[in-house]
Structures are given as C-alpha cells and as structure tokens.
Length: 117
Picture 1 (cartoon, rainbow, N blue to C red):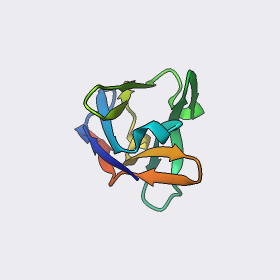
Picture 2 (picture 1 turned 30 degrees about the vertical axis):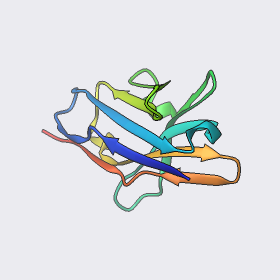
Picture 3 (picture 1 turned 60 degrees about the vertical axis):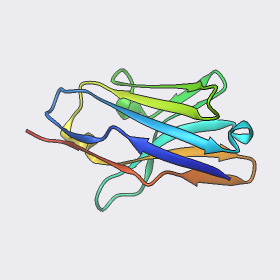
C-alpha cells in the first residue's frame, strides 16, 4: 500500500507561480512512476506530467511552464514536485498526485489550484 499526501495549492494571479508537493509513504520501493493529474469542473481528469525513471511525460498545454521532479528521501518517503510557472486561468483545477506500481494506481486527496485576478 502507498499513501499520498499533497500540499501547496492555493489562489494565485495569472502569471504567478505555485509549487505542489506530494509525499509518498508505505511501499514506496514498488513505485515505478509518479505524476500529477488535474480535473477542472465539468471536465475529465487529465495528465499534467509524470516521471518514471529518467523519462518525463507532460501535457502540451503545460510544456515550458510546468516542471516535474522527484526525489527519494532517507526517512522512508518519496517526494514528487510540480513547479508551475506563468499560470493561466485555464490551469484552475483540483490537482491530484498519482503513484503507480504493478497492478495498482494510488491517488492523493487532491489540492485546489485557482488562477484568478
């Protein structure tokens, strides 16, 4: 089992920046990929960016603005970050952390990001 806890969402003006963090605990050695998804009201959940080994995959809509990175820590947790720059109103959504192991997907509780003036 893997537990995911997100932090870092909030309200920001267009053009601003936010950094999302996700801490994975539990069976972290079984994780082969981590990433961020988002879901706006009335829309389907979509991939924002993911990282697996040295391979990064990101949505065209965020390329050049968002950066995903991860790090494993000695305290038994694995972290994944999403640095979001030049935010736009259309980036407003609930952002979910995701971790994958063979045969299972894990999700965080979600963190709201609102881009508005």
